[in-house]
Length: 215
Image (cartoon, rainbow, N blue to C red; front, side, top):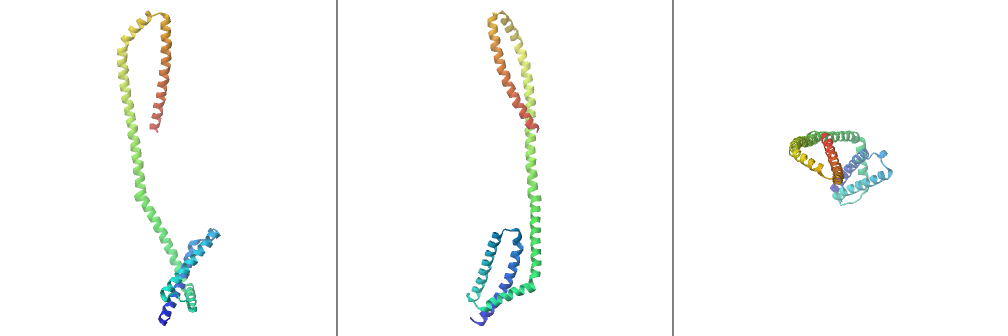
């Protein structure tokens, strides 16, 4: 190994030692050990140390093809100690500011999306639903009003046409024998009961529909 390679190796390992210290502080800042289960903390620690070892070995392999020397461990230790003594407090302050900035940016983006996207869409949907129900309610009232008018006209025409026929049938009815009229009356009462039952069912359905549209 040449002196140049050894020099680059020393500088790289000092940098990796300092980077390891910053990574360790960042990891501890986000881990929250006291709030997590032990097995999860152990698994995270294991993955962290494996990642750090692979990263250091990758840099070492890139500089001197992975040759291990005693001074490499000394350089790592010096880099870590230098970070702890000179850079740790400044890095932690910077890390906290970055975290606050990211949280503020996230809150700003969420509030912006709510005001510019979510709120307009919500009010448009509410307006459309209200409009549809208002139109349906108006159409129902119009249909009910027209039905009343048509029913009144039909009833008046029916009375006008039925009155002469009723008087004629009544006269014929009075001329029929009593046993025949009694049978006809029984049949009429039975059919009238069935008809009234069906009319009441239709009326209940109409009332339920009216109540739904009133809500």
